[in-house]
Length: 245
Image (cartoon, rainbow, N blue to C red; front, side, top):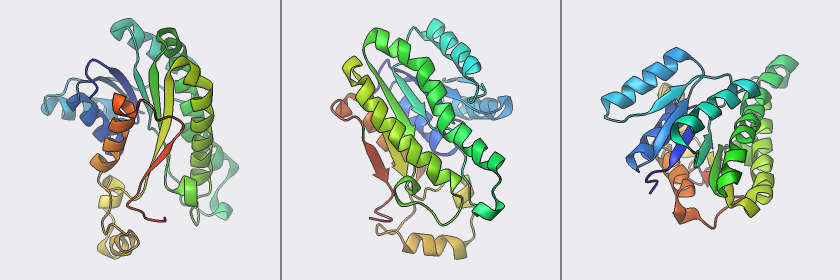
């Protein structure tokens, strides 16, 4: 589905991001993953290499535009293009507002929103030159419903939705599609390590009767990245088992 496409995936070293990388490679894409640290990038690249998947990796500071721009230029120099950008990197929050400092809030917004702006700003000129491209952002079910605490996380994801819809309108004349995927409760490392007494009520709240797998979410990214979604832009695709609908 992505034969000969060049894809960049931020937050690609674990969880949903790593599964997106796997699935894109399996579907013929050349993939470059971005992580936060050299050791996490190296670990992910080794895991993928052991699976027979050849992937490149970088670890820039996503909140620094100059670092991002250098990485993007390096990728363009090596691959000649970027067809797909997946802005997946992010950080969650669960503290109440009483226990959240303004610095804590700013850090969440910086990585969950400003980093998407930086990556997109760096990549868009190359997509415009070729008059084609796909930009996909990771949102969240809480961008639609909110959450009881950790206000910075849903606030940032509400903003991601707004950025997605607005950029879809702005970039449509250049044949650049912009969409987001809003995962529900997904079996990442953090969720998989929760005790049964915590997991059971979560499952009970999901009409489909199970927690999502990373591959469930990655499949949504694959669809939106592919030509099968050539007339889909400005959408926020929920992948949550109907958890709150």
